[in-house]
Image (tube, rainbow, N blue to C red):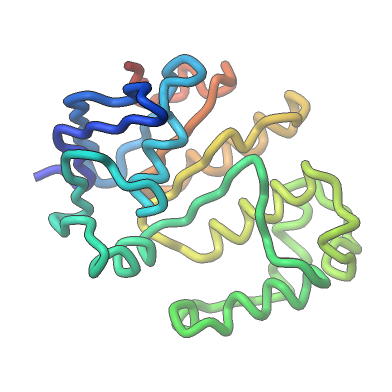
Length: 206
């Protein structure tokens, strides 16, 4: 059985049919690019997987567990979601990261602020003083990269990367894509960016 399954999904917004009889199976550690045209529900699809959008019909399974109101938190605990909006908590960056790893769901993880400072900031081309800055003072691109670092460090089984290269230059896009695709995770990418082409991802459109 596939690791992720969308079965006979129907979704309608304001009388507009977004999905009808949609089926998709994704294997564990598979890397998939959702490249459907704008307005076809790519972000809605991943938000259904997270339980933020409920389909009108059909079911979603993650590792053979059906997504329901009872199982949604269990399923979300398997997922890192990074979007172009880079919605990370407000505050000093160092404090934000430390607080996230104090959450009960994350206490089993090893968090090393020295590695964050000495490796990850450089890996993502971020200034050395980033940890001492307030999130509100960062550019959108800087917040995007911090959100991606956080998503990687949370070490979830499934990564959803929703338009994370938007607004970045080619050099930085290439650096980020090469980095994330090197991980042995189930990765779902929502993007129109050609940077993902010929990278070994399965392209899914509808």
